[in-house]
Amino acid sequence: MTGAPPRILVTGATGTVGSLVCGELTETGAVVVAAARSAATRFDWYDRESWGPALDGVTAVYLVAPSNDPAPETVMRPFLDLALASGVTRAVLQSSSLIESGGPTLGVVHAAVAETFPEWAVLRPSWFMQNFSGRHPHAESIRSSGVLTTATGGGSVGFIDARDIARVAAHALTSDVALNSDPILTGPAALSYDDVAKVIAHASGHPVAHVAIDVDQIRRIYTADGMPPDYAGMLAGLDALIADGAEDRVTDSVLRLTGVAPRSFEEFAAGIDWRVGSDVAIP
Image (cartoon, rainbow, N blue to C red; front, side, top):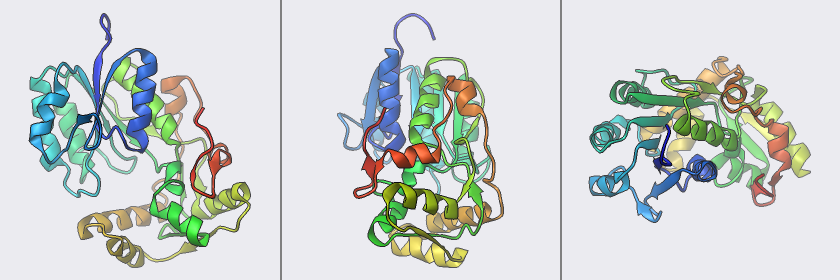
């Protein structure tokens, strides 16, 4: 992308990654259209009237799927077609490390993005380090009871800091480093949830324990928390995949695509005020 600064639409701009993507893009000089239901540029996946104004003059878009929707392709496919017709030539989708192109949920959107746009990327991050801070159920459980409950057993995950995802996203939207590819993004080490509990306990100065339960139990917990049954079942199934070793890997994608090594979980934990679960400072 050369010439005038690109005008880039970021959906989910008030979310964990979306807000960071907006910041990274602003530093590149891009014109950022930060869009969400509660943002200045209103955007709602389930309100097609909000799509056109958000796309006005946009040439690239960062796609964050609607949360807790087991079939996001239903609303996202029509949006992709409208975006292309509106002049968008590049789309970057935030997907998941465990979901292949053509697979369930975001796998369908992954394939559609690659088929629709001449320039595309699908980012497939591992699980967020931020799942243990903020408002995530894991974080609330850690703060309230010092317990981290999963059905992951002893399986390990290459947890990634959302800030590293945002850096990759900014590069994918403004340069050709990830053009027409679907990189898996991880942190520098794969950790079990037992390991995570120990690191958080050390950083916070308070005991934290990982409690391992079975897949059906975790599904019931998700459902009781208000998740749609289909979505709760999908998340529980992902825990089972972790237990079987599907996420026990690390990649060099963050370093290769940004030139900066990803943060370790220890670095992340040291930067959190664990009394409230928020960042002390974001460098």
